[in-house]
Length: 280
Length: 298
Image: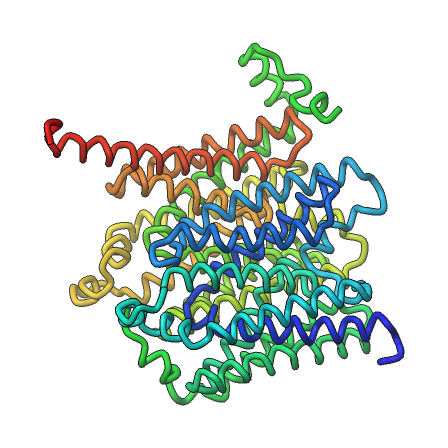
């Protein structure tokens, strides 16, 4: 399995993407912003296809769209949390734009490129080149470092916004920066598992970690470990069963870990960390 | 070059344009199906926005995709896949909402369910070879090739869904606005929430046959959000939401007929433009009423 270069590339890139997704996802779930992550995944689709239509590097479009999208979502809402209905209306339209770009792209470049839309939507982790891997490792390390640096104040701001603001924590700036970070990681993940499936890597391992432990740092670690584990087992399964798409298998493993965590903690209700959280 | 392809055959005479639109049976079917879907989405969407269940609604719409993919893999009618998957996941979402966990746990659960659904959908599509073009229409919809049978089925579902909502409209409104007071007054809040998700699942399944799994949202949330911006009165709001959904669908279908671009793009763009307009109107109206309150001399 390790003899193939595409497999090594996929494993290396996938592991780093998994770590970044697990860490950022932990806070996405804690802050109940999974819907914003969902919206960003649609923004990723539109951004990538817009870049394809303009003839620019797809990656540039992907990153620009998701990071700007994250900042925009943060700027919309009060305290850098956008309203679900506003998010929904905006991303329905973004997706409509994406469809337009898809149809322009497929009609203009006939044959050969007909699957571009599918690749953006569902990823192509076995098709990563050596330079793709280097870029995604560098960005994943960057994202993880930024997150770990702001982890303490962000945790404070997420658990008790009012008290954190009173203590002088820049709550709004943190919220904005965090959504931009989610955008960066979303763009990363959409290269690996595709724009539509990245939500699985963001939400499922983190959801499992939240169920299993109440300690934030242990939770962060567990979430990253589960995400990387899902990537590894998904890729291995994808190698063993070439007919099955690797991105589906990765997300399947991630959701599987969440289901196991739910089953393990089914007896006691909710995690203690959430009980500590003040009602909004 | 592209510009030449846009609006081919469109004349300045609206009457002849309309005549051209209804000249082909496939277009008549599409317009009828679009009308049914728009009315249903307008009504259920209004309650969905009121109940702040946009994320659940979006997940339901996404689940339509694996439903359709599974049905085509198994050789069953696609509508069966849509309805069974959306119905089953409405039950699951009701279970998640009913467990009364915190907001963050609920959103993680919905997100995981949605990701699983999409992963399954892609798995089914990959197992079912040679549907790459079909994948696009499952996700983004097509208004070509809607049959009479589909229109009849849609009509039946829409009548059932709307009848259910009208039947339960008053208690549902009560429960949506203030669940605790409604529960104290003896309204079966849990049952209503469950029934509403089921109806939402039904209408999403029906809508996604026309708009595709990814664009249901454009008809479900945007017209309803616009209506909520413009009025707080329930009856007027529902009527407005339906009207906007209808107008957007008809215009979108007509524009798509005369141009080379997909119907989903027009429907989403038109409804989003209306939403932005509604928000701007409200901002302007708010500024004007504030200006009236403060004397000009100050």
